[in-house]
Length: 542
Picture 1 (cartoon, rainbow, N blue to C red):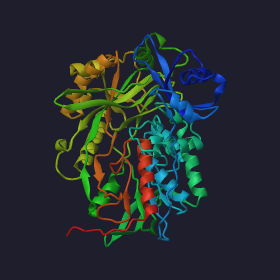
Picture 2: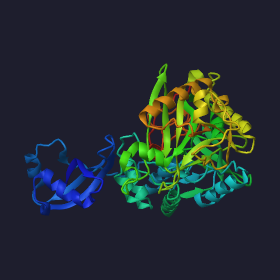
Picture 3: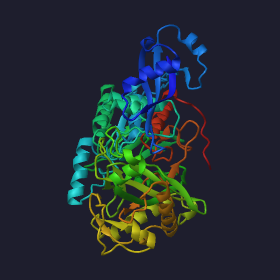
Picture 4: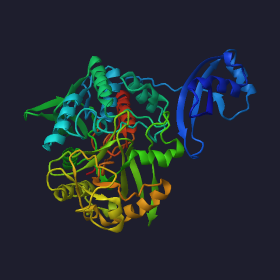
């Protein structure tokens, strides 16, 4: 198979033309191309007067491909390298079933690998199955009565189940391809295998999540919902078992010597339990900011120019970053084209914002987090959990500012830039989508001072990158605090806790991932270490 990069097609061209263009690059007849598959598809919109699609394709041809390649002196043409995932050999000697805590992307793919290897994992998930969880979340939006065990953060699919379902990642690990392939096999659109910016959408994710769960169960695994981890039993520096509590308060124990700890970035009570047990945890930088909403039509016009309503173009996205002053960065995160801003707390008396889009991305508004980095030196103390408590205090303050009923504080961008409150002001062209409503005021009273100052400078600079970003009518809804974990649960080269042989801190909540795909890949790697069954001496600090 031959790989050809950077084949360009204008917007109005059909993909059927790729065969002829590939043949032209290879200097052969179109009839000599036996097959063609798209490896990557992206949109080049750097020049607004010349928007076009760019493809990487793999082709098979008649005749000897090596001979043909030897005659082609083109750096964009090479022999295709097709990477496939093969399950590692299972060397595990223990007869005990491994336990996976959490059924977000990390826990899901850890459990899938373990089940595939025949180890029949037991999954503990504190929240509900994805269908029940959807009903609970929708009920919260209507009643404003929060379930602390099953919500936007907790439950089958993790926090990513209620998001845009973005699957792009910075990791180059070959396992990412297997993650995407499994998503497609379980119901995701096939285009995520080649799209430069793949996404599934919150409306399609439940189908995928449900199907993967049933796959794990068909291989002997068990998934226990509404089952919250309450203790990890450790003796002589090794895991001996776990305890969990059901929704009716019943305590159950499981004997095991392998636990994948994929708890997500919001399980503060679990982190506290692990800290009290003496597991090494350190402070980790995280980010704070607000979610900004614009009219999606205006984002399309800024990104696509005169082609803004072309039928081949989907809702435009963006990804912006800058360093306004003093080296402290600001950036946009989790941009949701045609999406909704959602109320996403996991504890009563707190406000958290997040973004969500369906697969079609056909809503009136675009939204994205505008975030500023918070370093450990900004934390109130050197306590390992100080960042976590700092995060919590901001969320509690937001609840108070919004009126104590899950209404979120918000400010119009025009007022925010001037340092003014929006209280009493009329909304402009942008109507907020926040699922439990907003109260116009001054989010500068909520966010840390240095965050507010950087955001003001950043909005102006980002407006120079994307026309209209600092539109006075745009709305900032706060706070956005859960983009990443504020702690890291330390682990060694075998991905095991430094003080608990057989305990595998995993994914975003443990501080080792940042998104659906990277978390899934980390889950796979932790599961592979269980298959490897590493034996080594653990030196405990006295």
